[in-house]
Image (cartoon, rainbow over the protein chains, first blue to last red):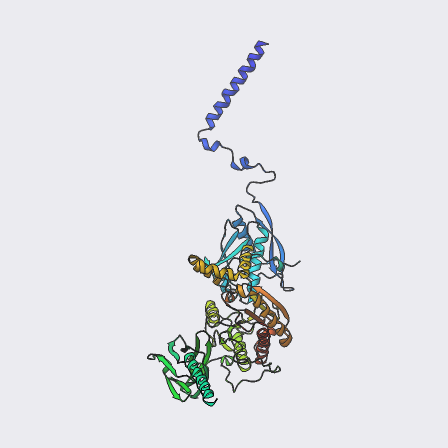
Length: 193
Length: 402
């Protein structure tokens, strides 16, 4: 009995020595031993390292039929911040509809930046083509404004108002009509049933 | 009996004469002449309201005849002006004539009065002879009375007011032809530019108003030039305008968009702004008292009031929009797009009832063709005119501002 116990202890001790030997031999570069980070963070089920998280959003485009804003779903990459997600929504709006609806954001326009304040005002800064390439006209300008404002406010609870900037600064009007000197509240009455 | 009666009569006559001399005395008129960017202004400021007639008997002079039992004394310094050579007084019994001599014969002028202290203001503007010859667009020519044709619609109802019924300070209507210069606004498929259409309609509306009403009409531009949006509002505010009408032609992403609509300002206010606005509207007198009491905050509060220049007139602007839209539907017959609110920059700083009319769509080829036609433009002007007439009838005759 006692001999058997001793044997077990010796085996355990030997294996401990062997393990520690192994550890020190391979452990020349200490940092390299650390496990790959994705595995450490991989608490969520179904998440695969390297594949980004996706998010479904609703964009609003104009229709030739009734002048209202019509929804169109899109899948965008999610995170890391609401600003980045909002930026992706704006870029999708510029790319235009896949269902034959009209995008009232000039295709030549480029998004420069989206900045979101604590008060919920999203500052969306476009390149100068946003106004230079705009066809002007009151109805056209309102289409552009509310396509953008409604799309952002609808998808992001943290966005209450949208302030449109052009080329980094405030612009008096979009095309000579609608004022861009104040932030816009969304207008959901313009959305088709 | 007889000597007594004489004495009473003599006493009465003496008292009458005395009170007459005491009450009337001398009428002082202060004359000032000042040059502005594109006109020269003669201001006659008087201690008493003047009864006057104005005539241009010779091409180079304007005569202001003043009827006054009192002796008139004018107070004027040396005149130094681009357009005005001199201002002088000629007496003929009780008739006094102020002669305003111009350096040029090619000028036009308009005049208006402001009350308390009484001021008669005459603006002389040099006529650009070249502009008409060079102008590539016929509709930009100022319609001279001889050229004016009757619009195809029935003649407007005359609501000419008796001269004494309303303060002359309220009698300016400002018409704002949208865009101008390098800023051409919406463009049609066939090349029609919004700025040209708005000017053509505005000039026609001006001529209809001037032919039928005793109002002075000021255009924010009368040729193809760029005018800043704040300057357009300032034109209304500086003239103490009764109404401000901005004229536009619409443009849309959808080719099928058609019809006319009338806008008034949407302040895009938050709940808090709306509450603040309601507070000011309800307690104007309290506010006035507070302004007097709290000298320190005076400028701040004035700024707030100025921020909301149009806010105080939103209700009247809405009604004006309704009345004009009704005529666009009825007289003009374009599709009714209704009255709407939107944050139009040009309306924000206007301190009187103000609307922006969007007549038909340049983005719609059929309506672009219509907008280019003289007849359609006359009909638009006529419809807007009729809406204005209805609004003027409805709005209180006195100045709505205090």
